[in-house]
Amino acid sequence: SSPHEPVSLANCDQEPIHLLGQIQPHGALLAFDFSRRLTHLSANASALLPTLPALGQQLAPTDLAGHPDFHGPFETLLAEALIGRESGPVHHELVLNGQTFDLLLHVHQHRLIAEFELRSISEAELNQFALMAYRHMSKLKLQFQRDLHALLAEAVIAMRALTGFDRVMAYRFHSDGSGEVVAEARQAGLDPYLGLRYPASDIPAQARQLYTINTLRLIADVGLAPVPLLSSDGSPLDQTFSVLRSVSPIHVEYLSNMGVRASMSLSIVLNGRLWGLIACHHLSPHRVPYAIRMSCDVLSQLLAVGVQSAQAQAVAGRLEAAAELRSRLAAVITHQDELVSGFTPLLPELSRLLRANACVVGFLTKQAVEGELARDTTRELLTWLDTLEQDIYFTDRFDELPPPLAASLSPFCGLAAIRYDAIHGGWLVWLRHEQIKTVRWGGKPEKHLTVGPLGPRLTPRGSFEEWRETVHGTSCPWDELDRSIISQLLDDLNRACISRTVELERARA
Ligand code: BLA
Image (cartoon, rainbow, N blue to C red; front, side, top):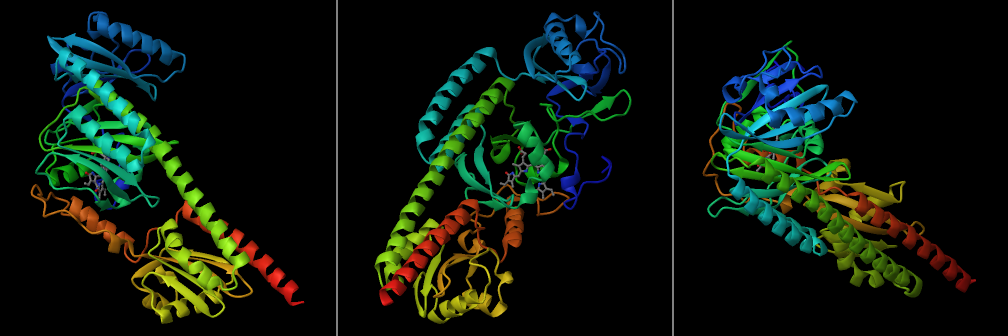
């Protein structure tokens, strides 16, 4: 799509957010080709930096290139670029016209990009932060042995202490791309966003892709007009790794509507996939110096390792519980005459194992239920399952079921079922409620809310309503682990039932 096409709520996933051609005003940007020719510069560059070559002209010893703190890192990076290495970022402190800058240099798409970020705090203050970052990372590592929740709770506290943001949240993405605020540390007096759900479209696909490779972005003041990049030949500059990149106007409107003036987010990347974000908000402009941002970036990488190990531990725990239940169920099949009454005491555990809200076992004409399901509905359900060809069935939306059955099953919306005994019509069934039954907007009316040109959709409340729409009539999906636990149950119980039938027939003979 052309960069001139107006962005709307409908096409914002097409917006090329790495090519917007503008930066934030707390610094200047220069881009060079490998012949040292200036190909792009931000419109504020000549005001902030000493003598520069004209657009399209080469760097010369009489201009910025003559500054030793610029020359050295620039030439080193250029030498690498000339042998085909896209490297960086290289960081260097630089004093120009009495102003301290963090100089960030990187090479991307045949351009050497130099960004001059205005430094807002002193060296001494920065050193304090380095120590604080170290302390928080050590504390975070202590949480590695604990569960995911404790880990994320510790991480948002650490991130808030390090950066001073008013609100720091951990967002976790679900398999459908929607998200959830799973941990939060905030300034007293702010409405809680914990538990908030939002649809996949709030962080569109191209943004997620960018955030997977560039793991940190800061918007220091949404109220300031971005500075345009000027180009020697009209071509856009690829800003994928630019630290001063100005973000999508849609997102700026979202933040403004929420009363947020500054925002920073960090990616939590697991095995190359964006697992979640740490998102920070400030109600006034807020600049986080480069060195502190880098500490935060390391902290979030450490967090990713912790998340991975907490998740592996949780998976191992569920698999262990599943194996144990499988053998208890198989023992019932082998040793008890009455299957249904043998299974009944195990139903609550079976239900919890699959995060279900109800669980049913049927065998011949008998059945038992854990949860709120009427007898007639249970029978109707088992009768319908018997008409299926397959031995295993999953759905997270009841519009796939015959409408009368779906109606009787309400408020359940999701179903997983296995035919563990084909000969006697033995079924095990799990049921899940509709998602929105378990999640409700918890926020109070928002104090800071105003509404921009694109309307109330671009607010947390608008997001929540949109999310509700997209999940209407669905339960939480049966994920990969749920499915593998259930299909292992099917295999084991099936095998036990076949032996049992063989034994019974042998005894009878
Ligand atoms: C980016 N959207 C983002 C980001 C977040 C959110 C965290 C990352 C950028 C950052 O660090 O600020 C979403 N932030 C939220 C949500 C809450 C929050 C949901 O605090 C709730 C409390 N955004 C929309 C819609 C569109 C959209 C409807 O809500 C498009 C139709 C677009 N969001 C959008 C785009 C970006 C974005 C384009 C990328 C911004 C950029 O990096 O340029």
